[in-house]
Length: 93
Image (cartoon, rainbow, N blue to C red; front, top):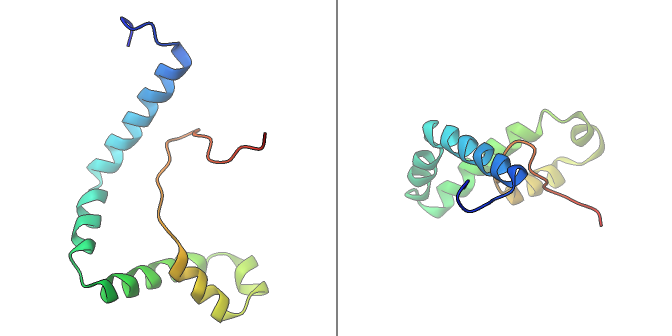
């Protein structure tokens, strides 16, 4: 990156992301995803639904303000995304 005259802030973000991605790789995230993708689609959906529902159960605001049917629908809709530390995931112009 030095030879190509990349600014230091961009270099820093790139390095941090690569370190983050490397840590994820070490945790076998991709291996787990690959194994899950080998399951029949119905079993994949059931597994992800159950995992998401347990994660959502930790949010009191959801439990106290939404009917279980809504939480179940939300559990079926969640998609996993990975972001690097300090990465902007939403910005208001």
